Image (tube, rainbow, N blue to C red; front, side, top):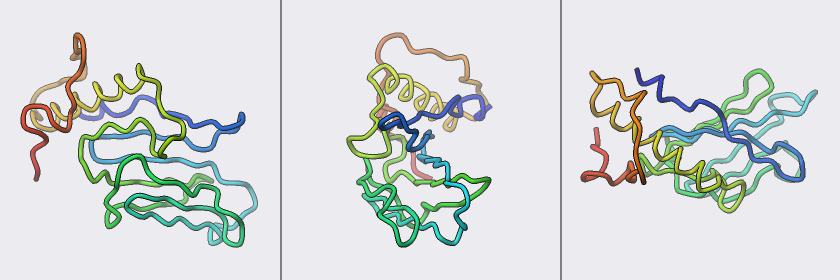
Length: 158
């Protein structure tokens, strides 16, 4: 049932008509997907994940991304992989349930409507996680959705 509440589509950050990266999020993670340039060997790419900063690119060149995160991440459980010409960066949220309007501070922010939709989806993910025997995939909120991180005493820790 939880897969019914997974992100339906990825958000895109486009700058000057170019897709910089796509991204999505769950209660625990933010995922960034970057299309890699052709004819560059995988060993030439690098990605440095710090708690509040991301730097990545091709060795010997200026960084492709060198920006602060919107919110802090857990570096010990964040990582990156290369597969099928895509760099996939998995960032473990430091504050589970935090709704991110964008992975990169001040860049590609979701509009308020899209942010509200993300918050509602994360709230339903939280309900599903806390009540595994129920199906919340068709549930709806009327009006403003509460913050999934703080609602009713906050997210229970494992």
